Length: 131
Ligand code: MN
Image (cartoon, rainbow, N blue to C red; front, side, top):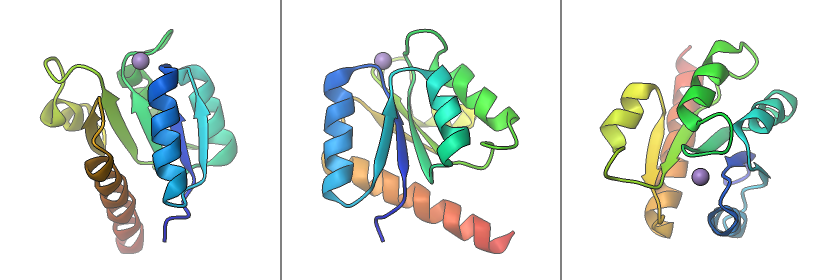
């Protein structure tokens, strides 16, 4: 069921709109913000099922923001997918090593992006069942 709330943290308006539209067409409700600081507050208030985190953000960067989310008992169990602009600097392995649950590079491929969202949501639900 694509009804899980997804928080989009992305400062690029065009990319944020694309991600929002793709998710909403599939039935996912979304929340969005341009900064990691506001994203953290929204995560505490709304407890989304998944966070999509851009890495290059104004103010706090996405990797630092992930560490803050993980250090906060209110947000530490929310899965986070890294969305990176430069596949040269970042790749799936480096992002998973940083502690992200998933990875997509920009520009996103719609089909691959939606599969990654579903994979991470399902993996998190399985983990919740076991523990
Ligand atoms: Mn950015």
